[in-house]
Length: 352
Image 1 (spheres, rainbow, N blue to C red):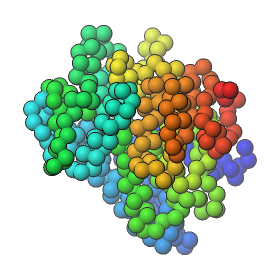
Image 2 (image 1 turned 90 degrees about the horizontal axis):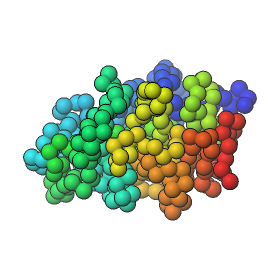
Image 3 (image 1 turned 90 degrees about the vertical axis):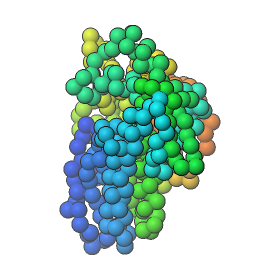
């Protein structure tokens, strides 16, 4: 890989802290870059156009607003208020939170529960990524799992109210909020006539607005799921007017007795998804409604389903493509993804 191409790569790894702000000021070519921390990740917004600075600054304000509404650690957030009132009463929430929950419930039904935002009790029990992370007992998992059921999320559209029907239930929007934020920032970019830019919500979700400043598609380096070396990737995918999301068992995990325990849970077992996947990447055409939110959601759903079932799910969806990295080093790709994918790391091989 030559040096010029390397510089253009955008690394998806959560572990790499992106601190480049490019001066956070409007350059003569009217491009503006800004980075910061929100939604438990490093985010980066880039835009080129006459109103680039306004678009990026408004984008950051919107992300901060959504973060305050969807956070599970903020006791005053809409999500925390819903969880606190579980089994008691309806809670009126911001339309954005209501839309995320309604959309999630719709896809929970489509996936027959393999995607479920009511996974909160399991997430809290394992505590992965916190000082309390541990392997729970079978009885603890069973008790928490009894409170996981998307069908017990009640929605009242007349006043955007939500109720969790069973005491002890809790929802977690961590698998969809970043994608929703991508869609909202994209709307802001459109309002400011931004035709070139990148909305990057860390490894979880991003959207390529048009091309980069050189008129080329955005080259995105997909993290090697077992390497921490800077510049070492699984491969490169080129995107233009597309949403992209990646999930991996390397993002938040701990190892105990030789076993890797990570934050992507199977709602059917209450344990980290044992599906034979290390990571997966979804790309969705910008013409697809809620492209950012859907890409975020689907990375988790595919991860739980496993390589072949996950690829089959994506093949049945218009405007959606995927790559799945199996724990055996096999990479499964849909036909559309393959056309945009290059530089596969020799540690892996494409499935026939």
